[in-house]
Image 1 (cartoon, rainbow, N blue to C red):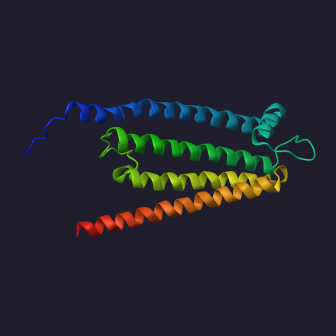
Image 2: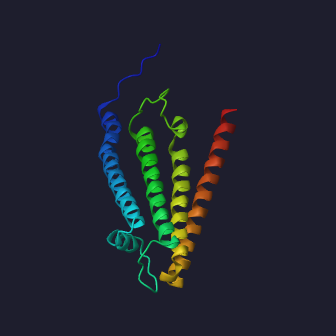
Image 3: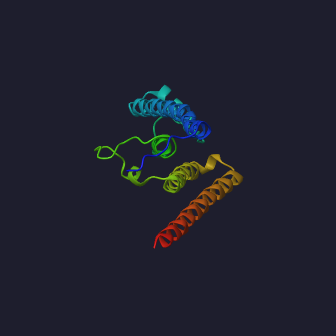
Length: 196
C-alpha cells in the first residue's frame, strides 16, 4: 500500500491556511443568531398586534415600511402579508447562510464526516464548489423574488424608478443563475466525456 509522503513546509503552510476561513464561518453563525433574534422580535410584534397592541402594530408598520393614506389602527391583510413575507425572507436568508456555512466549510476547510448521520442534508453528500454556486444562485433568486413581491404589494410607496430597478435586478439574478447552471452543465458533460 502506497503511503502519501508528508508535505514540504511551504505547501503544508499553504494547505493549512484554509483554516483562516474558520473565523469567517463562525462570524456567519453569529449573523445567523442575529437573524433568529430578528425573526422572533417580528413574530412577537405580529402576535401582539393581532391581539390589539397598538405599540406593536406601529413597530410592525414601521419595520415593513408600509405607508397608508389613513393611519393604520388595526392589522389589515396588506400589513399581515408584508410581515409574513418579511419573516419568509429571514428564513430564506437563514437557509442561504446554512448552505454557505456548512457547504463552504465542507468544501474549502475540512470534512465534517456526516456520512450516515440521520440529519445530514441531502445536498451535502455531493457538494462541491459548482453545486454550491448553483444552490446559492437559486437561493438568491428566491430571496430576490420575496423582496420583489414585497415591493409590488407595497408599490404605492415606491417610485416607478425603484420598481423598474428592482425588477431589472431580479431579472439579472435570474439570468446569472441560468448562466451558472448552464456552465455547470457543460463542465459536467465535458468531465463525463473525458472519463469515457
